[in-house]
Image (cartoon, rainbow, N blue to C red; front, side):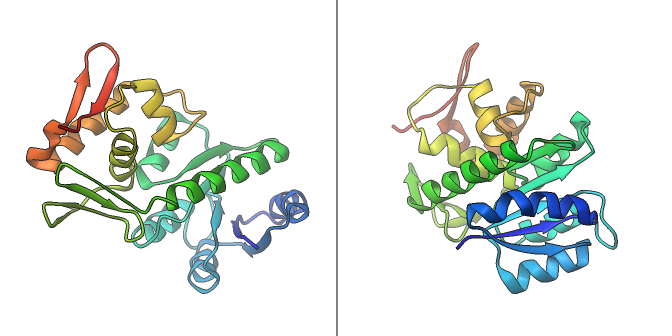
Length: 222
């Protein structure tokens, strides 16, 4: 049975989500503040976390940042903060989905199922290596010619997506939707900015990420 941690200071909101998730067979863990959320994360090891931003003691940003220091567990933000800057900040922290309140509980359940399926599919292929660049998904590490490379959660997801689709031309919109969020319609220049940062961190291997003029990018295997 998959565990889902719901961290939200509003009891009515937690109960609403629980009412829709329990019939699907999930085990539910609750937290009413950020401190308890972190404690429950460490003790219960949930398979997915639903995280509010505005919580007592530690806010959702802090909780997400702490978890991402050691884990790639799927995190979905459920928040009333709907500004684009908040969404961009969340994705840079490593959030997998960003859902604004009010939301459809049925859509939430569908997104949770889709995200858990996606994670399961990615875990089936734990290791990818190409041209001296290796991704160990189990250890959440990127290694170039035997040396670990320090990437942000978004940079890691971006490289992972490019390498899984090595040889394919991926549009900026495809990359944005996959790496950031399927429902995110932000500025496509976000992709260019993160590609540039990733190339720098990859050093000489950054040249493997080719620009497809007027379209997007391709990870090239020689």
